[in-house]
Image: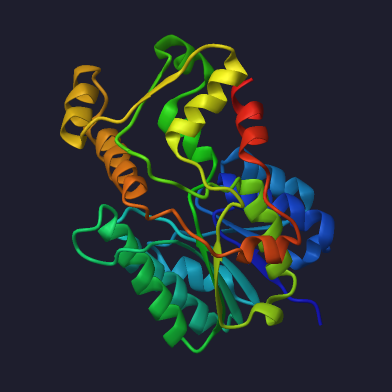
Length: 296
């Protein structure tokens, strides 16, 4: 019997890629998506494609119970801010239990330092609480711990125009290495799991890119792509925050950049596992190729 699949986060960058691949590999009648806004253009497109669109919000457990009825495999994209994430995620799992969901695939994150002093302590704790709750739910699961998306590079540095304007990468990431992975590679691997969940039952997989890189190397690669010298400066965090303030960057953005930069500097994303290559059956897209597509 074919599983009925529901994809959360379906209008986001990762969820939409998962849906596009699933459309090629399984019948539309087997697919459903969860969206918060019925006016969203992508939600409208899913309806035109014949995909069942269900409306719900992680903050509204009744909407989730209704959306999850008849669903066998739930692709559960993490969401919510750091302080509310574990509460919202508990709603998702509780609704899944009540609706009779058979398998949960949860997008978590990699980490090393679980202490309260870790730069991403609140984020890590929310993922850890969610993982533990899923494990205790009685529903079979696959937990996918993601390394940083390759798309984060442009979010942290700016686009080509901004890079050429400043000719500088200015982040307190020191020499920290990250195993960045493009969302497209994650989506491909995760579709393989969605379509064959029994092969990954009650497993925790760590999804890292095939290469490790630091921002000094990224600066060198971008220099070659744009044919301009791009320097890399890694200031102290206090200096970084003060400098960003002088440019009128919102405090929330500064805090996010600071926390993730410190986590990179601390080696949180310098991970070894090759689970992603195993599921894909190949290496992930080379970072040189990815950066070329982004900054050429």
